[in-house]
Every structure is written in structure tokens, then in C-alpha cells.
Image (cartoon, rainbow, N blue to C red; front, side, top):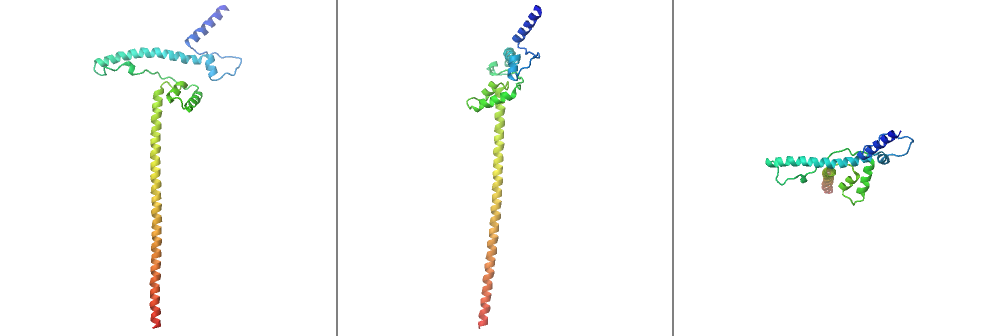
Length: 204
């Protein structure tokens, strides 16, 4: 019995140190959900372990890149002043867990208008490439703004053309009415003159 307890203790200890989540089915019910389960069962620890390991991978990768840069410099295919400090190594990992809570936290932080969007994304841990995501988003919304501006200009031009067409039609109608009135007045004047001449003849 003592050996069994020691084995379980060592197993739990190495899982805690390495950061392996506990997949055991817990009995007795309980209302823990979401972040509470992640913290209780060690799912949050695995993220910390991954971040620590990433730093070692980056150091090794930069050493490898430094050798490649040196070879390219000797071959004249890279600038002499180019160094590994001028670039960054990034590892893409899935950050979609608990996305709703992260999105709400980001919205709250961004709504304070005190933090840069990149800092808000980094705090919420929504992506491993904050700068690239921000740049893509900025480019996208600039394109959307340009399209909306072009659409507004086209709409205004269309309305202007419609107004000009309406004004031209109204002017044509007014000219037609004026011409009709002029013709009617001319006709009446001519008829009056003819009638006066006829009356004078009869008086003679």
C-alpha cells in the first residue's frame, strides 16, 4: 500500500513539474467550469511550460540562423551589417481555447482607450503573432474605408446626375409651357386683330 501511494505521489509530482494536465475523471460532482478547471487540472500549466520551451528553441534557432547568415555574407548574398538581432523567431500555436472570454477581455481593455491594440492582444493571449495580426487588421480596415469612400463618391455622383436630369426635365417642361402660352397668346392676339378688321369693314 505504501509503494502504491509513493508511486501516485511521484506520478503527480512529475506531472506538476513537467506541466502535464491531469486527465483523470474526478468524481463527486462539482461546479467547476472554464478557467477553474484549467487551473485545477493543470491545463494552464502546460501553456507556461510551452512558453519556457519556446525560449530555448528560439536560442537554438537563432544560432542556426547566425551560421546561415555568416555563410551568405561570405558569398556576398547578404549585407555585412545584417545580424540575428534584426529578425525574430516565432512559433505558431493554437490560441483559440476559451476564445469568448478572451474576446470579451480584449473588448474591455480596448474600450478603456488607454492600451495599444497590440498590448491588449498580448495580454489576452489571443495570438502568438501580435504585430502581424495588427498589421493585417489595419491594412484590411484601410481597404474597407477606401471602398466605402469610393462607394459614397459614386452614390453622390449618381444622385447629382439624377438631380441634373430632374432639373433638365423640369426646365424642358417649363419651356414647353412657356412656348405653349406664347403660342396661345399669339393666336389670341391674331384672332383679335382679325376680328377688329372684320368689325371695321362692317361698320363701313
